[in-house]
Structure formats: structure tokens, C-alpha cells
Image 1 (spheres, rainbow, N blue to C red):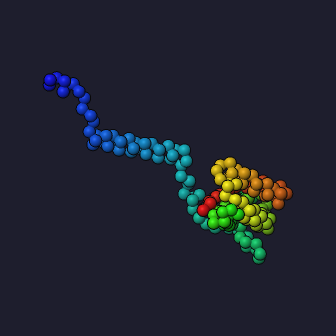
Image 2 (tube, rainbow, N blue to C red):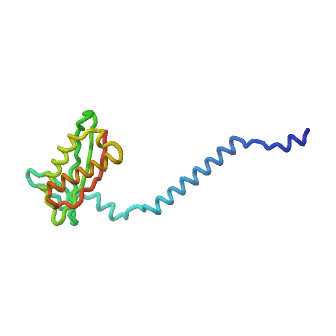
Image 3 (tube, rainbow, N blue to C red):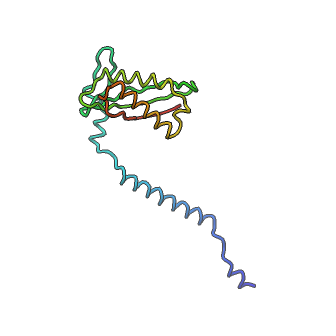
Length: 164
């Protein structure tokens, strides 16, 4: 009778199971941190400090709001915050940057800003839901920018897109 009892395996204790799960969690977290650091290292300190300073060549002409321009022809527009057409309780916030072919035009950038804001007021939540809806929104905005700028804007870059 005693031989049968010693031959049956004992179930692992709860403490041992918790310890194994904790060690595996720490190993997985450390591996994820290491891979993330290798794939996307933090930016150099000089680059971080340069982004904290405001753009030196921002324009502030009367009637035209300030837009940041860079040497490569990129204009960062002011954030657009408006409510959707349906449901009107939902709000959208969109930040875009325009890449000009040649010298940036702040007045044209402001016209494009107003055009995008007017368009977003006509969009319903159902039209922009999911990845396909977001792609349609990007395509529509790119088409409007192309029409407004007559090809002077080569790229519309979405920086933030939030629906609340």
C-alpha cells in the first residue's frame, strides 16, 4: 500500500506556480524592453532639445495665424478641433502638416486649414470608423489639398487624430 502512495506524483504547490509565472513575466518584460530599445532607440539629446524651442522662422503676419515652417518646406498647421456632423456630441481633433514643393506659403496653408476644418464638420462617425474609414478620410483630405493647392503641396502628414 505504501508503494502506491509514493509512486503517485504530487501536484505542484501554488507558491511554486506563482514563482514560475512571476519569473517568466519578468523575463518577458525585460525581453520586450530590450527589443524595443534595439528597434527604436531614444533620439539624441541635441534633437530633443531642438524640438523644445519654437521655430525661429514662424510667421505672424496680420490676419494669418502663426504656422511653423522648416527648411524642408513642411508647414505644421494649428490643431483642428470640431464636432462631427453625426452624432454631434462627438468631437474630432486633427493635427496635420503640409509638405510644400518649394517655399512654403502661409496664406495657402491657412486656406487649406480652413478647408479641412469645414470638411470635418460634414463627416459622420460611421464614415471614419476603423482603418478603412481612416484611409478614406486621409484620401479625401489629400484630394481637397491637391485641389486647393494646385499641386504645390506634395504631402499631407497626419500628426494626431483623436475622436472623443
